Length: 168
Image 1 (spheres, rainbow, N blue to C red):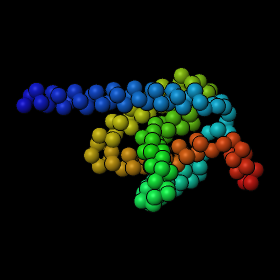
Image 2 (spheres, helix red, strand yellow; image 1 turned 180 degrees about the vertical axis):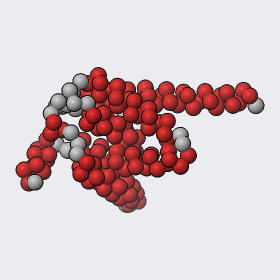
Image 3 (tube, helix red, strand yellow; image 1 turned 90 degrees about the vertical axis):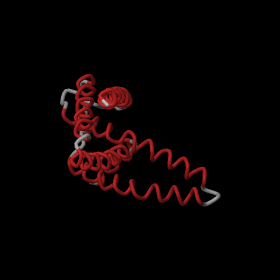
Image 4 (cartoon, rainbow, N blue to C red; image 1 turned 60 degrees about the vertical axis):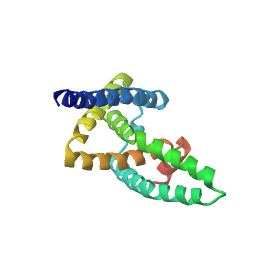
C-alpha cells in the first residue's frame, strides 16, 4: 500500500516535469516562428481576447459536428478526418498558446529568453492550479476556450490583420 502511494505521487511529479518540458519546446517553437516580438501592435488587447474567447467557443462546438458530418458522408471522409486531426492538435496546444500570449504581453523589452521563461512559469502555474478539483476545471475550461481562439488568431496572415486595422 505504501509502495502504491509512492508510485502515484511519483506519477504526479513526472506529469508536471513532462508538462514543463512540453511547454519549453512548444513555447520555444512559437518564439522562433513569431515575428515582431518587440512590436507594440502585436500585443493582444483585452477586447481581442474576448473576441478570441467567442471564436474559441464556436470552434470548440462547431468543428467536431462539421467533421463528423463530413466523415459520415462518403465524399468528405478524408477532409473530415483531417479537420478532426487539426481540431485535436489545436486542443492540445491551446493552453500553451495562452501562456505564450500572456508572457509576450507582460514582457515589454521583447527578450525571447524572458518570454520563454515567463511562458513556462505561467504554464507551470496553470498545471498546479488544474490539479485543484473545482477550480482546476473552471480554469482549464476558460484557458482552453481562450487558447483555441488565440491559436486561430495566430494563424491570421499579416494582410488580414492590416485589413482589420484599416477598417477600424
